View 1 (cartoon, protein in one colour):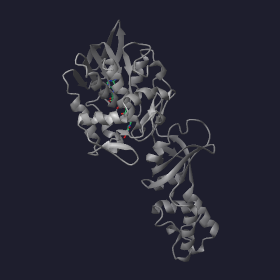
View 2 (spheres, helix red, strand yellow):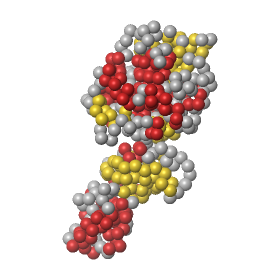
View 3 (cartoon, helix red, strand yellow):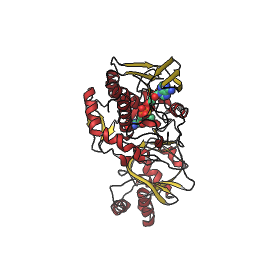
Length: 403
Ligand SMILES: Cc1cc2nc3c(=O)[nH]c(=O)nc-3n(C[C@H](O)[C@H](O)[C@H](O)COP(=O)(O)OP(=O)(O)OC[C@H]3O[C@@H](n4cnc5c(N)ncnc54)[C@H](O)[C@@H]3O)c2cc1C
């Protein structure tokens, strides 16, 4: 039996390895880029956050998020870590539950997968972009830039649209639609947010530990705590990625409220600032030693205090206003950055049309899909790669008759 797999990313490589466990199966893995795992190499800021000790169904989204349950339980985090260990990868978990390769290099993950693919019954062809697929009787026919192939079963693991520079494309959606599958609306997620606040540019590169809340028409829409980074267009950093899903998707007023000193009570901050009234400091130094200097200056200015006033001359209500700005600074949000900047695609091929226990299409027997191309996306912190490993291995194992 021959199994064709389109896409040599995280899910496609996992599927190829699972299918090839059956020695009677011949796997053809087709990747359009010059090498496999290009996006994987760029994950986790070059460190590859390959899973999360807390990953379970609750961390996943989509029109039918429960679709992910079976795969995530069958190939759970422990199983994934043992699988990687069997491939030769040592890993380490951070306190947050995020798991990285011990080497701290994403290429280690790509390399152990690449080496494992060197099996007699796996034929890997890179630089082969699949353009057309169809089923003729019981046989799937694949056509692309490198020629044509035929196979008995076909797994589409082309990933999503996010991260276009790293290989994200519409390709998988198009191939699956050609078999009659439907696709939901696609949106960027785990993405930076643009702001109309003019002060953002002056803070470019400044990082802050904060508790961030997204407000939609005054109601809390999402919130999280972690590192925030200001950019020339708005807000970035892990905490923003975590709360970016569907921000600005609906009309209305969207704001980000930031507590820039989450560990310190407002009263403690106020007492410290009042104490500073007995010094010779200018207002530009009011928050020195508390926040990043540039951020401190922008915050004092934001409440209308001139840089040149001595702290000693501040009224108590002005100190109050500065405390409020530090503990709840608000900026207006306009839209998320585009798919090219996003880490993940929210939305995808409708999961109702697939069997969650096998990843096989309910419309076309022998056709499978796995990974980001499906309408499942996970939280920030290793959840999306866990979905790629779990769904890829499930599809490969079932197609290869190894379940
Ligand atoms: C910058 C960045 C950082 C990220 N960091 C993390 C992280 O640390 N942890 C985490 O969990 N997730 C992270 N993600 C998300 C994660 O990388 C993806 O969710 C995951 O790679 C999806 O796996 P996949 O196999 O479905 O798709 P991909 O990994 O995108 O693989 C799909 C492959 O299919 C190929 N392909 C597409 N169409 C065709 C075609 N027609 N013919 C042949 N080949 C084709 C592509 O070239 C690609 O190699 C990050 C994403 C980005 C962009």
